[in-house]
Structures are given as C-alpha cells and as structure tokens.
Length: 244
Length: 276
Image (tube, rainbow over all chains, first blue to last red; front, side, top):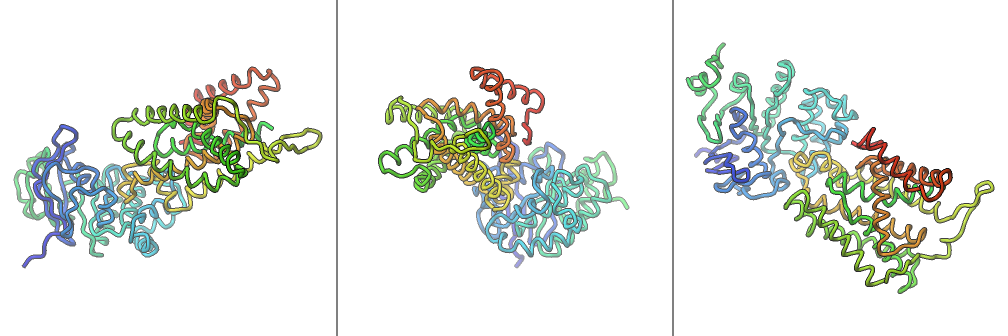
C-alpha cells in the first residue's frame, strides 16, 4: 500500500480578480521528494506557490497537507501546518540583520521553541551566514541573500519547503552551492518543491517534475521520463536538455 | 527651550510615525486622538481627582483596547476595500472625536493644571517651565521604550518585518492583521501619553488636534517615517527651529519657519533624516 502523498492538490482553479491563472491543476508531492515545477514566466508557477501558501485561495478544488484540508487557511496558519515558502526575489527584510531575519523565520508556534537548534543547523548548511550574522541584510551579495532566504525558511521548522526561482541572477558556482545545501536539507527529511527556469539543472536535481504551461499541467513524470520527452526539448528551443 | 519643547513634539509624533511605518497609513485622526487623551486626563482629574499622569494607569489599557478595536473592525476592513479608504475612515474618526469632545466639554479651552505644571527651574540666569523638562523626559522614555520593543521582542520585530515586506512577513507565519492591531494599539497608547503631557503644557480645545497633527506631521517628515529615533530628533529640530525662528523673526513667523524647513527637507531628502 503506497503511502499517501504529503501534499495533494486536486483540481484547483485560481483567479487573480476576474483573470483565471490556474486551470484544473492537480499535483501530488510525496514525503521526502524533491519535486520541480518548470514553466515560463506566464505559466502560473508563482500563483501556484502562493495558493499553497494561502496568500491566494482557489475558487474550486482542494489542497490537502498531511491529511489536513488547508484550502482556505490564512497564510500564517499554513506556516503553522509546516509549509514555508522561500519567495521569488528572496524578499529578505532589507533593514534587519541576518540574525534578525533568521529569528523572524521562527516566529510561529513550535518553531520558536526550537529556534536555537534550527539556528545551529542553518549555520551548518550556510557557514557564511554565521560569519555575517550581524550584517544588515541588504548589504549581502545575491547568493548570500538567497542563502538567508532559504535559512529563514528552515527556521520555521517546515515539513515542506517551497522555493521560487532560487537561481535567478546567480552565478553557476553559487547555484551549485545552493543545490548542495538543498540536497543536505532533503537528507534531513524535508520535502522540497522548487520552481526553476534552468531546465537542465532542474531535471538533474529533481526526483520528479511537473511542467506548467499557461496555468495548466502540460506534462509530469520522473526526471528521466521527462528527459525523453520530445516536447521538453522542443519547448526549450531544441536544446538537448539532458545531454551529457 | 526649543529642544525641550521638541521633546513634546516628538512624543506626539511617535505614534504617527509608527502607524505610517508599519501600515503606510497617514493617520489623520492622530492629533485628535492625542487631544482625546488630554480630555481623558481632564475627565479623570475633574471627576475623580486623580493626577493625570497617575490616571494614565487607567487610560493606557483603555486606549490600547480602543486602538486594537479600531484597527480590527474599522481600519482592517478599510484596507481591504481600497488604499484610500483608510484615510477617509481616519478623517471620519477625527471628525467624530472633535465633535464628541465639543459636545462633552464645550469649546472652552481646558488645561490640566496640576501642582507642578506651573513650576519653573533655572539654568544659569534663565528660567524654564518645569513641565517642558518633564515633557522632554517623557519623550525620551517613550522613544526608547518603543525602540527597544521594536528591536528586542518577537512581536516588535514582527511589526518591523511587516512594515518592510508584508508578503514576506505573512510567509514567516506572522498574522499581519493581528500585528497591525497591536501596532495601532501601541500608537494609541503613545497618543494618550502625549495627550496628558500636552494638556499639562498648553491649554487645549476640541479643535486643537489639527494644529498638533500638523506639528506631528512636520516632525515625522523631518525625522523620517518609521524611525523612532529619527522622529525624536525631528521633534527637537522642529522645536528648536520654532523657538529660534520666533526669537529672531518674531512670534508670528514661528510656524512659517517650520513649514519652510519641512519644504526644504522634502526637496532635498524626502525620506527624512533617518527614514527609509
């Protein structure tokens, strides 16, 4: 009997005002998976993450997390349930120190009691954050800010982390470092859903992926299955994304 | 003396600065809320014979609850309607308070006269009203208290975070609606403290709120929106400028000089000396 998915999204429609952004989306994430969401800018990736996080609510359909129906919950309740989002553009608190940014991450409920342990493990993943913990966040480099954003997400003691466009604007070396950290985080048992534009890298790191096109799921499958798909290659201008 | 007076201006302005910093709301009712605090002190003094500062023990919790309720039931919903709605609601609150005070207390000017509010002290050969010094001390205490709260407590840091990035704060598990409620409630408490000290320093009428709103506004613009220390220094600069201006150019031009300085700051550094 296969274990039920950690997160199950069933047939949701999401609107921005009168404009429909997501059409009949269904998606499953299993415990401990590293799942990727791939798609162009207008595909609705961020809308989907924001809906999971409770910033938006679906007009139809349900979202279940660990068996609990979280479809209409407020954002702070969703964090309490164990889902945190590392948003697009990092959105760290610019005028607060690194340490304060991290501590704010553990604001809610049980996370606050565990904050010393959480802080230690964040520093283990990202030693540079420990060095710069008194620094004002806006003075950090892009890569360091991304580390801070991920660290802040970890401080909430999540079961599921949603990461939106982590590699945007960062150098390949930095991206490598970040993915290394993600793998460590996955080893701790935290499930990760990440949204990326860099298709080749994404399919290398993810267990499974969903491809979104203008608000609908176009394809899904394991990374190797998708690599075979002609459409993936075509959609990204015929580049052999899984080539050696 | 201008510096001491500036302490009072800062005390009045701190609440305004905080509400703007956190919620991006210019609370038009702030001056009237301060005057409401003055009348509250007056009520306690005339009806119950309590010294206004001591009376704060009663007024502070009341104003805290009132502030929280205003945010939760009025302002919170107004934010959902549009970005102009809160301003209009604030204006409405201002009118309601002014008229309520007018009905309750008549347009006659009142003052909070305590045994110590007319004392003076000497520095060198000049004498200053003691109350100004008390105002200044109150200003410093409130400013430091607010600063400490915002930087060293979880709730204070949540308020600061929500003011820097609302979406990110929500993603941290911060209930922004409740946090805004606390911020507004705290601003109300600072308003009532300011009101009591104001009442002991100057006479006040139901319509005094407007002139003090203007002063608070000027203070916040000079010092920077959202910075407690900046607002305090802004108050002192304003107080200093006002008294110096009155000294050199005559009392009639006191406020004019202040407005000129405000305009200059807006032109050169719109975010204020310490603002973001």
